[in-house]
Length: 357
Ligand code: GGG
Image 1 (tube, rainbow, N blue to C red):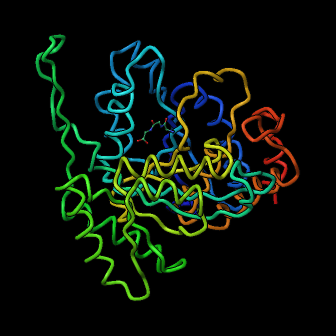
Image 2 (cartoon, rainbow, N blue to C red; image 1 turned 180 degrees about the horizontal axis):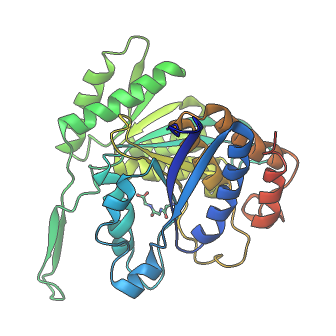
């Protein structure tokens, strides 16, 4: 967006640092974007939101009742982490992250995974990995359709329905096919249509019919269990993966592990049509076991911020940020999850030193 008076590009970004290490990795990413904004001639107005588990403890809600309306006027959302040991995970997720994804039609969850410079994969002999998981983000297994019966009694039962719509599967398949077209042309669709007899055959049919419209793109459907093994044994045979909400979540964590650490993995919750703000977050959660120690890896959040800059049209700044953290890592500055000794602050300074022009 341009300021009508000065003509400079300016963006309003809502910042939800959230819980646990979200409070540590978020300031690191914001400092880098601020440095890049100066260098690349745009401005960012951060609207910091103190939403999350502390807000829940104080007010009984993860965000205010009009939280979605507050975010709607911004150009994007940067989120750290949600989750706290004293609050059920479904409360934290369904009180903040999932409503934002749904209300803003962020139906694509884009999760690129690469082995970054200076990182050794835990998989023997794997020195290169570069794949993207395209996760369906607002339907599938993450549905609130279902219920609990006879709570606390011996006959207690729980029912959870998955919801797959033709429109929902078609649009995620389109997004993935277009991405595959720009990359290798190879698309893998994660399925389980041998065991899950209604939704998964439907997923297969719609994905195959949709991808058939894209010349030069082949789609290979692979059972999720076999795909998990293949991503460990032959990860380079996979380039773009399209997967349902749950399968995509699991596969992207698996791939991030293969690339060295879940701490480096970013995620973009995209509304591709830009009718609503998109949201950018690291893949990792709040990590209460290391929160408050100043040792969290901020790369996942920095990379998510780079994806945000790309989405805003600031591609040069996005590439600059990616190369800044890659150079810092190549120079041997690594946090503990990657076998290094750098604190969050030390790593951030190493990146900031490479963010000026
Ligand atoms: N970085 C955001 C976060 O804390 N995510 C935790 C999580 O459990 N996410 C589940 C999901 O992405 O579906």
